[in-house]
Amino acid sequence: MLLVSGASAWAGDPVNLRGDRATITVQTDQRPVEIGRIQDSTNEISGEWARTSRACPPFCIQPISPAPGVTTIGELELLDMLEDPDAIVVDSRTPDWFTQGTIPGAINIPYTDSADRLNLLGCELDFDGFLCDEAKPVALFCNGPWCGQSPTAARRMIEAGFPADKIHYYRGGMQVWRLLGLTVTD
Image 1 (cartoon, rainbow, N blue to C red):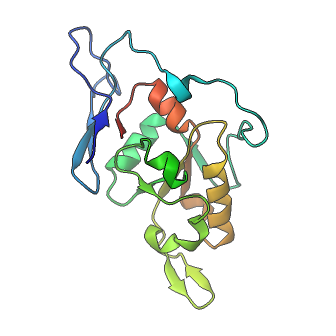
Image 2: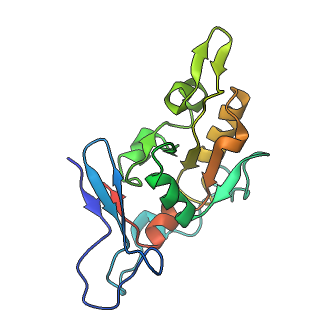
Image 3: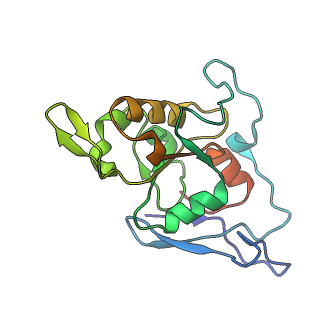
């Protein structure tokens, strides 16, 4: 069962995605999901996502760009990619994190499997690895600026032959997504 949190009824001024747009709708494996922001202007982030400090290593602040040629993007660019039928948004976290909630429309390819599953991203398996001439634009994300799962996935994908210029890195990840009150599938 897919539960969605994020949008709720609120009588105050609208909390839009952009000045002219309140929501977008993305197709998930189960059904279309509307992505918007929590409309309660008193809402606060809590729990795991409110933590500001984690031990480094392994939870060190990640660079803006995880590898040469990769484009770092923000929320608006990620929303555009979610609406683009040719783009694929990938949650690079391990399945235990993925099942705790993700961005609607994202597929889960754990960073540990990223180099072995390029066939899901438009590449063809060949005797010597993958041919990625038809690679699709991909956005990778993980838990946030302190999470190394999507940067590791990007580097592994590039080493396996995926073109770096087709990779987009949403550095804000789930922590910033939740901070902005955006819809999460649980």
